[in-house]
Amino acid sequence: MSKNKSDEVKKDRRMRMIWSSNGVWTNSGYGTYQRDLLARIARDGWPVAQNAFWGLQGYPITIHFEDLIDERFKGVKMKVYPQMADAWGADGMIQHGKNFKTDVTFCMQDIWPIDPAALQQIKNFIPYVPIDKDPLPAMVGDKLKYAHKIISFSKFGHRVLEDNGFFSTLILEGTDTEVFRPMDRILCRAELNIPQNVFIFGMVAANKENPPRKGFQEALQAFKLFQDKHPESCLMVHTQQPGPGGFPIMEFAKSIGINMKGMLYMEPYKAIYGSDSKVIAQEMNAINVLLHPSQTEGFGLTVIEAAACGVPSIVTNTTSMPEMIIDGVTGEICKTDVRRFTNDLSWVEAADVNDLYEKMETIYTKVTAEPQKMALACRQHIVNNYNIDTQYETIWKVYLEKLQSKILPPLV
Image (cartoon, rainbow, N blue to C red; front, side):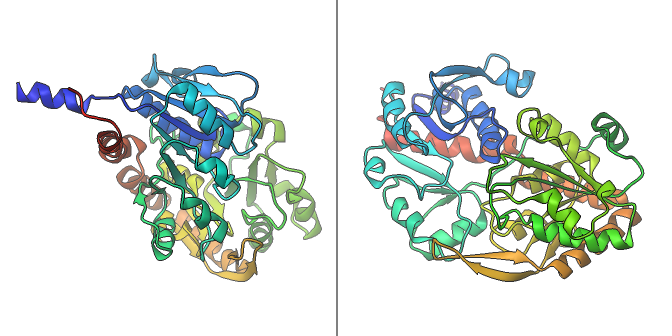
């Protein structure tokens, strides 16, 4: 009797929740993680919906996770509400939340642009918040004061919040290790029409600002130094969400004398609309090393996606990025050089080009000398620490059950 009662309590799934973020099909970093997390929340029986303030307009839809992921989620579906008037989704969190009869409102997005008046109307507001600068920008801290609870998704963010007097629950982002897994590199390159017998660095990153937050300029400058010594090498660039203010990648590459035969640039339409996680996983398996010299990062999802495929990364020694790898084992950490003070009264740090080049030489030597050693370490690191199935079962499910017990009255 007690066992059945215990099982019944564990499967009490009355708490209704809405998540505000990029649409789960959009393949942005937030969209990808939302897809993986919400699919598991819905499969576990929770009534969950999404407020897609980016990626959907006009009318609510119902998505089927089987179509977005695979047959593991057969029959699992979720209602998705569209963007309303506010570009950052605050009105959707309020009005769609009322329509869904939500008990708690989560968001995974920047919260600094959200109107404080709106935040006061959002029911049990819990931001799963990106923190990508230190000191904490004041306009982020001001909005966090309206939160019912706060969840951080990097150790860096958790520390910065704590330093500023905010308690947060740390739940790291994760990745689907059945989608992102080691594959045959020869077959992946053949399917992607990528040269076989070359050493390839890769970048998978949004290109929306100039100076480029994702470090495109420093990466290209370092690659020029590497290519001069290793003329057979290539740099493959996959950019998502290019904006009119983005960095002119190919033009800059030409201007510094990179041999353009070594530049593999994914056609923008395919990069935006034809590249889901399965395509990204193929790309990760096709490259030898991921370059991720970002200047500021709330987490760095592509780093763990690459590692899940057995591919090491080079990251910058700033914000959350050093925690994504085991230095010297699953990747390399390069020094920073220029610090730039930003409009939100904080700092961003660019990679030191010469040190980035040296780290490229270091990792090239390791990967070519013992190709399986680093690949196995990368894969194991992600399976042990960032497997989203494990994270859901051991962390997210427990968090949601405890939250429900505090928000809702017990079952009679």
